[in-house]
Picture 1 (cartoon, helix red, strand yellow):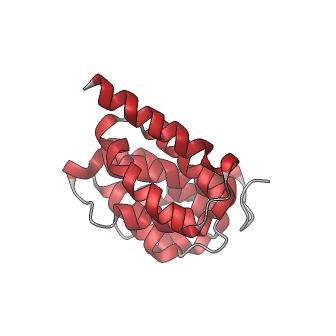
Picture 2: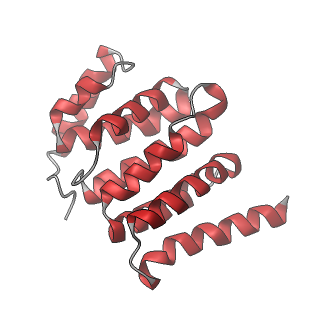
Amino acid sequence: KASVLGLNIALFEFAAKLPALTTPTKHTCQLVIPKLLDRAGEQRLGGLYTQACVGLAAGAGPGAALGGLVEAARDKAGPRSERVLCAAAGAASKIVEAHGLTGVETKPLMEMLDIAFASGKVASKAAFQAVVHAVRCDPTLLALCEKIPEVVRAKVRHQADVLGPLGRAGAS
């Protein structure tokens, strides 16, 4: 068990270093991001996973990285997938905060965050942050989250106002 964890950590660290070694492409993101997501959920390596995804987004752009994330999380739903969705939402949050939504297909992204929000307490926190950053880029996106109750939407709007708008290109 410990060796599996060690191997996974090495894998994540390698993925995080990838952008320094080579410029990641959309293909790299589609290959690496989904493969690592299940492991991130199982091993609770959400933090390392986020670093890897943000690194890939820096090279390949947020569209490619978030596309890979949404693809990876597509068939996940319900309490059994909560840890995986939490890792996905956490990574999405940091990607959007750092790189904005340029070239991102926002509808599938918001749908994934909506599902993550509804899957349980832990994932809902991560999803909340991600939705806040998305709304900072584009306030109309909140309407795509149907599972988020109005009380929480008000909090999202408030938080987005407090933090201020993010350009489409993210925090520079």
